[in-house]
Length: 120
Image (cartoon, rainbow, N blue to C red; front, side):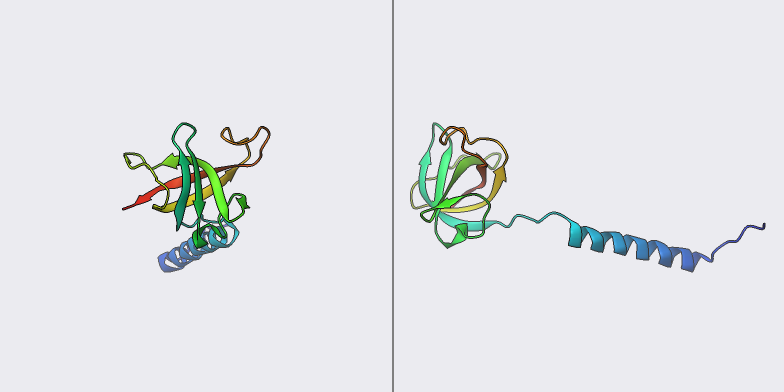
């Protein structure tokens, strides 16, 4: 058998189709992207890093919302020195983890971790 060579434009078009197909497959079948939203700080315990948020922004976020309040362990943005106070606007994203929340009741699962910072 003889070697068969594809013309360069055909090979480039086939490569582009493969890359585009992989991108579309990743977008459709890939993980959901967490969305940042804004809520109001209901309370914050500095000793346990337990943060509770309220407002319209908590709807649809990961974690358990009880009586209109989303509580979880706060993980701050690196380099941030602002501590949340009751009534502060707070931009965040929440993530439910499979472990127990150390600041909550024993055996509570899943734990909620809140990543974000105070808006000032």
